[in-house]
Length: 294
Image: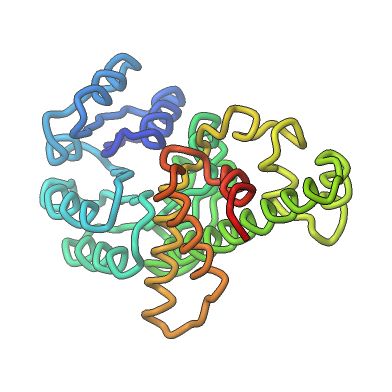
């Protein structure tokens, strides 16, 4: 079993760490929020007084942090304290430029790193069914894949450093736009007098079929259970979708790629955030669209 340091015990990080501990790995954890540390201690994990203290005996270091600036700050603290041969896995969702800087920082210290953002939300973190999109050296990926498999159902090596983040933002740009289109379709169906269940039965088996319809339908009582059946409690919060769409637009601007649907999706989620969407699942967009004046 591996000696793992886990830094960042938020809504995603804590259940991921818990799954590693349940699998028998030795975990030392750190978070700046005392309540998160107390929860981890209650699950039998060893807590450290600082991020640097958490990593000094670890052969695998996992970070799950809010943004690229924080990731770089934490790496600047932990890299000098990390033992020779340690692999750092950053599962945060951050901008590609920061991800590449992180790889450079770690590589210059003689360590190995993977950027490994995840898809699957809190439910996937709890169930251990996340998808990991990883960028970095194949040898490092092969070494830590068994650990990632404890937390995830699908582990994909996407290429060189930064490729995991690229895969994540492309996927979530498509997801954000497809959810808006799904919400529009079901809202229009309702206005036209079509029952939601009938619309689902047709769309989910026809050319409009997609994950936003089949697995995460934004209409309560239709399809598999989703946040729509729990008053749109996330799930995947609108704030996180807005963040990922913004990262996608930053990346598109850097490489000169037109993404008009992604840009419009970012605008719509931004409006919804400003008009009462904060703290809700991103599929609650259907309520915003139903109330919007055409």
